[in-house]
Amino acid sequence: MIVAASDLQNLAYMQQLLLSERMQDSCERDALFTLHYAFRDRLEALQKSCGHIFEAYSSSNAVSSFQEYAREQVAHPQPKSTTVPFPDKAGS
Image (cartoon, rainbow, N blue to C red; front, side):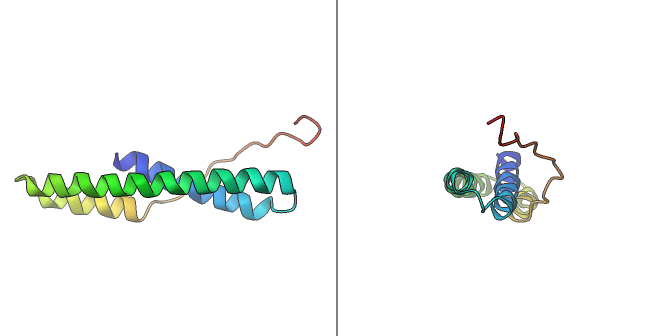
């Protein structure tokens, strides 16, 4: 769950970068806004779910250091360096 939240945060970050670069073409802008908001909403839902899991985990007699480590990792993800290939306008 922690990895999934971190991956979604990285994806939302990459989409935000992409959105800022591709604002000139209105059809791309609309599609990217739709994707960005959909991922943001799913990320918020996943973070809430993680919070409920962490609360349940901490109420059992588990080690609290794992909980703090997990929250830190989700709260501060490192962006991945990934090149996203774009189709040329003639091919799309």
